[in-house]
Image (cartoon, rainbow, N blue to C red; front, side):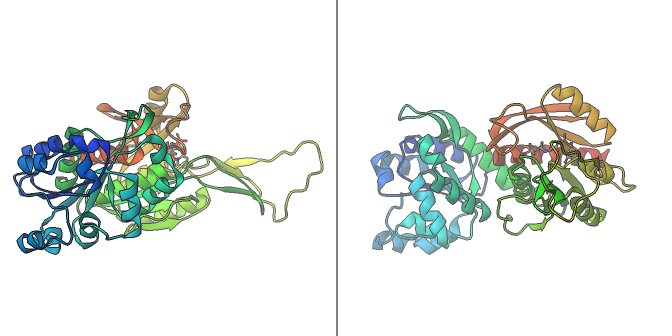
Length: 401
Ligand code: PMT
């Protein structure tokens, strides 16, 4: 019973996926949770409060200004009762309200009043999910540690196909149980690199790559969720530093190397997710290179290999490297695992433009000396959670060997 003694407020907002929530309540209760349901007015158009009262065994709350309900369990009391506030389905409108801190009904008020972590399982049309406004709201919510479950890809009620389907009730219940109970990295210090590096050529030009930092930032958040103290060393990206994570901004590979070496002496786990430039120009010019000849020749020299240097330290932490490959994924990843003396390597196929560099999703093949595991294509935050749990497992087994 993974959710035993866990009080969950299930907030239901007005989307078609609301019809699945009686089943979600049953799945949460089957894991041992106590569930109280809060509905918005529009949610009641999609699913009956009576059905939810019957499956949860508790009266459904829906009104901030209901004297009788306030006399039984007031909204502040309800907010304090919760160990987790789960909103499923969470519509685009609800996400916007949450982003801006509106409190014009019971559910949005509870979101402000509860000290409990908030988890949302979005559900909406794929175009609405991909809309700039929703994505901007999502970024802010993730910075604030609102946890995201899904959405899944697939066929939608409106006939569209794409991201925006609510995860199935069983998946939501499983993920919630994992998040609540596995503080498996409590007390561990983890350093993670993310994003690209920039190698300057002259005062206006540089050499870089398409890394957005999303994968590395997602790993930092996932590691912190599991109880770790995280230092994130980031190349230049367009992401806000995750709240409560020490984030050090660097630009070049050499700067990233120096920052990493200063933190790894007291770190337990090192994860190299950054796309570090292998080479830099031998001689950066102080003045802008002028267009003169028909050809321009630059000489490049090797940058330090950060990951390999960490893994070869006398007191090396547990190291996880990444391998970005366009072919022979397994062979090249296993080569890097051995050559760089790593504990684990996570390989992604970056020839597929829908995953890897600068996309919302990724898929990973993870290898270690005695095993391997495939993590199927998923949103980077979900994938990061799966990968961090695997890292925690491997770390514990390796240190107990
Ligand atoms: O940032 P996103 O847009 O979310 O994209 C994520 C990602 C595709 C960048 C990420 O999943 C990824 O694959 N990161 C590693 C990219 C890379 O540089 O791979 P590589 O195979 O060239 O390098 C192997 C490993 O050595 C990596 O862990 C890298 O961080 C490390 N390395 C490489 C060169 C170097 N000089 N120093 C290093 O530490």
